[in-house]
Image 1 (spheres, rainbow, N blue to C red):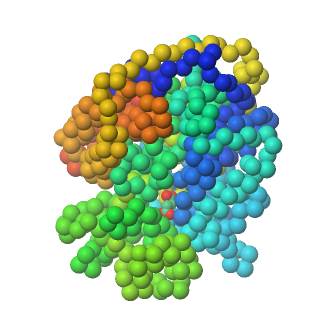
Image 2: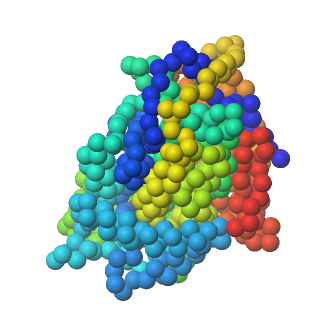
Image 3: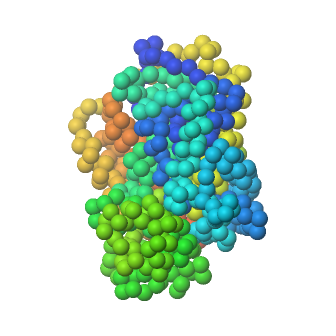
Length: 545
Ligand code: SIN
């Protein structure tokens, strides 16, 4: 049984008598689609405090290009969307959850349209895009490739107009607080102009997003530093599927530039993948060719890069034509122009990058974790929808459905646990060493490079063992420190979550979905059709899928 940083409960000392206190009914941490939807729902019946570590717009949601997969076309069916999700999930989806999300997702998207979201349409009829793993064109999109912005802005408008939702931006949540019984009672937070303070809440909803920043090459915004995963872990929440990290096949490869997403919808519009010799390789490998499930395409690109000794492959959109491309993907077109890539004459250099964390805090159908009073929604959660690979554009749907469900369920704690009840005094002294000074930038960059090298698209036992050792070694110097500002806390969270990813990846001795082991290339249903659950102090446990 692996034990990972078991001693840590809080990142800093907490002496409640010396700190300012805030009170709310429902604390929501994070302002992506899941957090906003949860806040709007809870605010129907209680006071909500929505806390974000940057500004309200900084989220994975805001950056989403492709869209939302949803059954709105009368010739599409719920059964077909369910079947596609299960196939791509490679045996680890929870069918009841898939059915719930696909079914309720229709209402959630219609509701969003009612709140003013405008999805692309022609003559008043929504147009649907196609993405990898889908057997039907069912992805609704906005402004061509700015779907996330449209959804965020719609939800932000609704949330900001709601007088029951109070906002605290640029506020870093270090930990959720649990009482002697293990119940979550709120959180400890920090803001540059306030210092440390406590937020007491009857229900706390983690909606902190993903962990992409633990990888050097990632599509995620800088805020995606795995904070919620690490907070949940320290509070005793069970985390599941941590080895399942999704790599997006096509991110722009320009040396020195960040890995911007070239949406899968571009392949949905007919783009081809070519190797450096100009050979279109996907039709040789999968019947869906460029629209095979994401893990299949990422792995094919990775192998082709190795075979051709190249750092990238090419995404060829020349046959789509400049005008049509610019109309359908205005944001991507502009981005490529800024790098002087003329898509009418030049194929786009692309390579895979970390994109989405399937693993997270294990939750029930209403987003409840195993820690009473603590919920998780969106990328920080593991609901059972995604299995071993997420079907393209299913995550915004999950965020809307689980956001609404958790926001409703959060009300159940109000009667019994109003935060106005006497506050339990909290005195936690965290003794930490100050024996070395750390070059945080350097160690953070080393961690992110190592994660890309050893825990990327392809993995192998000896490199995984080396990763676990290196992370444990760094942890000796990093985890016994008390930092005073965000970069240090973020790095402690990144290290904790990297350890979980590495230990989970070495434990799963098979290949399935996004987790590909060169030393165990086959899927082993007899031993591994199960989830790996991790709980602090208890190591890992297998749970049947
Ligand atoms: C994309 O536009 O390719 C990303 C969509 C997703 O991650 O579901």
